[in-house]
Length: 334
Image (cartoon, rainbow, N blue to C red; front, side, top):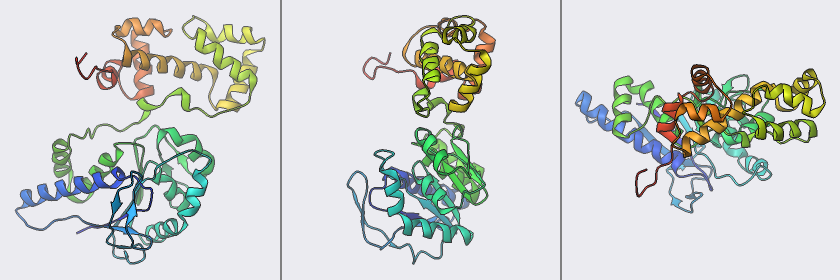
């Protein structure tokens, strides 16, 4: 029976661990029915640094079962995610969690499976367990993660990354996806599939690319690139936009590409593609225009090429993206 220790602390998000427990409980019930047994395969405990109750980010008082140091017999560690205020205060938060980070490191080095999502991924990164490995994190903190941990290969497009004995996931409902990974590992695909159906969890969702927005790009002070970004936002649908851009800025295409690569780590062409796809996403979410109309509005004139590019960038076809993300009035349903 896998023993799971959920590490919690003052200010952590209740949902980052409570949903996991519900998912495991449902899986236990399905296991018992399937194999006609009273034995619950998963068992878990909550642990804090000192064993005292904690208050979550929403001020809910949670009693714990033990201290971190007494949680020695554990096969799986789940690290709760924290609330987040701003990037200036975040380093201080990480410093305050040094005892928890050290415990994570010890248990990971002793062979426990270590799991974290959202801001909890930073605690794993601080422990060193992700060094030299692939990882993901919540999409809106990707730039901070990459800056703090250059030794980790960040793939923020992925919703979940499994690297040896460490599993990390992005934001939001990834706790459910992570729980299903755990269920499948110990109980098999059939119990995991049944649990996902009972809990209405889309186990096919493997990317957080559809949630990425251009507003989350790194801040910079390069005036040439800033002018280029502003011009492209206005003229992105025009044919030959990049050639016109170089002329508008009075620089060569070569200079423009070099400066973009230095500042944004992408080419102007890739930036323009991202800009157009981001605009298409917003139109799919908020308008009733046809896919063909939206394609033309953002600067493309070949439906097949547009659809392929959109799917490569978001992981979904335009039609599938609209079905998932289009706003509907909760009263009228339209």
